[in-house]
Length: 114
Length: 111
Image (tube, one colour):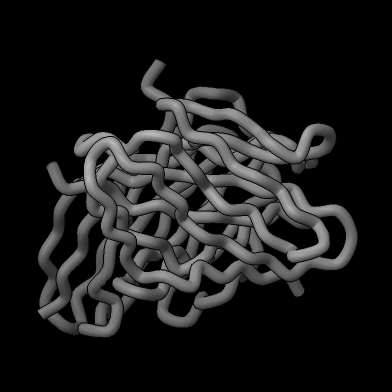
């Protein structure tokens, strides 16, 4: 099983450019999440989708938008990239309402904005 | 709101020695606690979790963690460290089906 698949793995953008990070899971999970990882700051939640058709802001949503395309796919869009958005982005999924289960993570997208 | 603290940015240990990576949490109610490991250029991998029951939980790769309710701690331990254990370790608390992560601790095991 692939688990959680993220594309692309690496990306370099110029300030002001836009792009969409793709995420897909094949575990039939209801909930999906987007995190960013920055040195010394751990993982911070950008947006999440508790179930198909719903999305909510996390801790650091500014500058991002998301789309829960279907149960499998959850994309993250940067409309106008800024250097402060240079980070490693992780998508994750989990069973909804199951606190005793952890998350399954993708391998990440390393984004550099110049 | 829940929070997790990992007070050490880095832990250095010699191969064969015991290791401890510290984690404290703050949450109202019963915490569901997790440890994840991240190897270079990889996503986070689940190590172990505490939900209820025995305060000492065992996980993957010989790791274990001790839940201490009075000290609100969930320290990760291993009796004998391996060089291959060198990685970034994250503690997390799940409250309301949302994981909140600590800042991470880099474990360096030297031969």
